[in-house]
Image 1 (tube, rainbow, N blue to C red):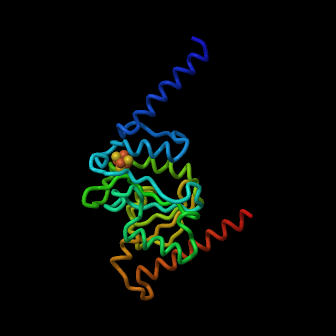
Image 2: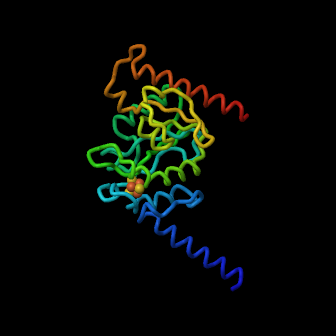
Image 3: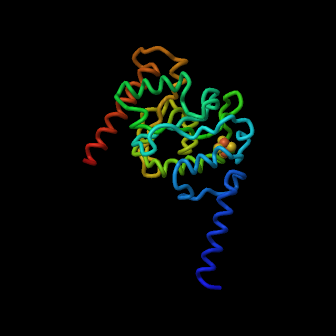
Length: 227
Ligand code: SF4
């Protein structure tokens, strides 16, 4: 068999394997599978790697700048997100946009926002370990394609889902950590801030204000080092 023939067989089998990705969580998603987010979104919208694919209206892939320096990762879509196909568009999303705007970060320019799971868990329950594992390779591809300098992880599920760190969010929020050579910071989920509206010193909102200022300072530092 000629080398060329062998190569063409290899490519064909890879193609078949790629087509099977949305059908079964056992099919791996090797790094480099997707050329762009549109390609990835097509798979997510047809995906049944976990049971959440059976009840979703829309897969919620992401919003913002596809080459943003800052990536924000949440847990999973809620009702508004499921209906619109966009992440963080309800009250929590509006608060997140305000938090970013308070330090002059533009959601269209500076940030790309997505979730650990692309489909809504029924009744907004926390996604299971299996559901997170099934969806995680999509997130890893998103991170590779967007290539952010900073990743903000909103809430304990996002931290655990990406890094495996199981510590409570109140313990680790505001701490810079390194994951896969990238700077990450756990922060409170904006819906937690909606349930805790106090702005007193030491309150969750006050702590978020400290954290987002630290993010802004790090963002400026990275940008100035590059110039
Ligand atoms: S949550 Fe992720 S793995 Fe599960 S069906 Fe949706 S896209 Fe697929």
